[in-house]
Length: 97
Image (cartoon, rainbow, N blue to C red; front, side):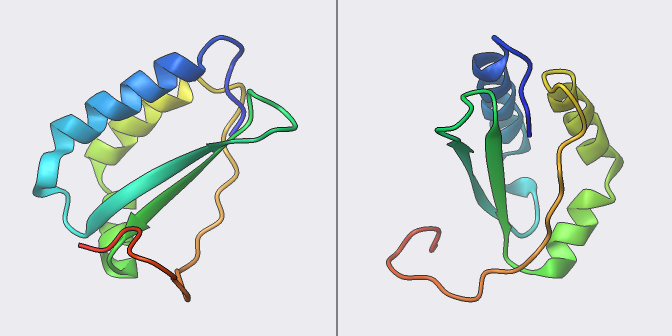
């Protein structure tokens, strides 16, 4: 996703607040990572982890998620690119409960 210039910190603050508000109540949510790309500091990659596709789909279809997305979208230059998939390999204890 391409963040509007000067909006990256605000985006992280929104994400942090939203995650705290959701708390442990979001079924299947395991966490997320945000990468800042070296080639463009306003280009970020967000990886969100859910326990299974069913939990992910339920969240994606939720009206609450749309409200959260619209708040994030206001910080972006354009709609983000979505690439859904699943984790097929993991080494180490990253993301384990």
